[in-house]
Image 1: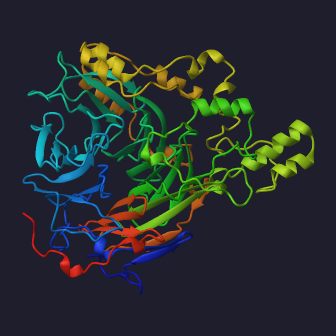
Image 2: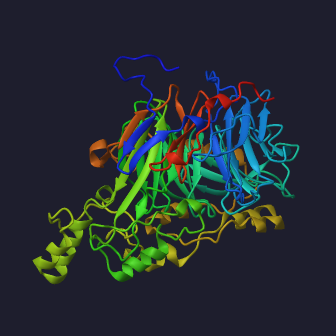
Image 3: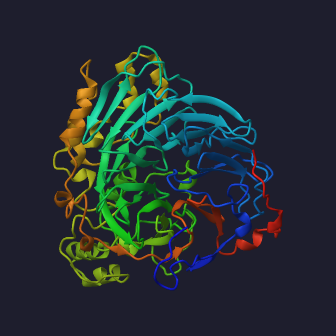
Length: 599
């Protein structure tokens, strides 16, 4: 339990909170936990994690919930705001000896009412593939810990694949697996496939296909969490060395980086449209990073301890479709080119990419609002709104200047500036605008030499390189996505340092060289740069909601269509009904809850 502190409301646990859309209410009957509902003694244990999968059940109860508490792993039908949780009837329950489950993820492509492919990572480094519905254990990867002995920190199925999954370890390495391949009985040997700024990608040096297919060595220290972009083409990694690194996953090329204010980064997530990445960590801040501009655009301060989870709310996030907003600069040709090559791609294939369509009532051409939340070790839930005032702070002044230069008419300029800042600036700072429309000094076509434009060639896929390096034809089936064109001409110098293939040289020495060459970035050197702007150099967000909702540190925050889900280290998974959804829960007596433990 949290220690008593000074102040009248320090230990008051909130059961509801208000936002501009209404009141969110905690549903006690929808709480999931161990069947005996006894708080878990969380001292020294791994964080409680929750994952969901929809099995497309015709009965309407398609959601399945999985959560780990200590040595135990539970799999239930999730009834959400509709019905009370029945903890006496788990679909599957497992108790592990000698190792603890640390994270898990279900494959949404292959999930049915009769079968679910669930990956479980463990504190000793193993990865288990199970089917909780059939109560089967299919395979165990890294069983003898020959690949990596450190705990699994994060694992996810590769979007769009039923066979490939990515696993991150506390060692700082990530491994790409194929469920159809074995791991081998000897430690794998690697050869360098691609090398970049403080990262390297190796492929297994084997004549036959075996796991892992690829090994990523990223930064210094653990990879605490990674997240695929909504379209599955990019990978964002939150690392213990304090760096956010965003990669083009197929080509294994670094797209951009960001440094925390101090300490490690613990969590990361993408906006539903893939334009922004939010991180949280040991600096007690949430940081918003623009994918297209590769820069920090805002920070949020509200937590009193480490931020453990960040997540976007796809239901509140709203982007009104329509013509290009008048406050953006650039010609129609610039806009079309940016649409084709920028981060504003269509992401209709992803469930997370569905933005709620809300018509603007104030007559403005486009209204943009992103809602995201965060939970931390301070037991607090914070909600944040990222609005167009933060996203486009100086866009109107640039348009005003462009209009005056083009027509010489103050009337047209005044018409363009009626929505916001009317001050005139002859040149906006280079870090003032984010997608979908480009900044005037960062257009792909603005490079004076067309020969160096990244659009003139495509990066080599690491899957194709792996085929050459190993000589195994089966690698040809590992192409995840069609390689997309590079965007930024200023990234050419990084690509020129990449090595597509290195022969039979000592990969261990090269790995050490990569790790020591780009030594730990000194905070004094990065603070005040584009990697880590000072606090006064970027907007500071204020939390819409900042409420204490648990006694122990919070470890889960997931936004669903009719509720949001949180979990704390005591092992309680809580459901918060969205405004207007609380009436859906059928009243049931809490006395029906079981008191015994399911074996």
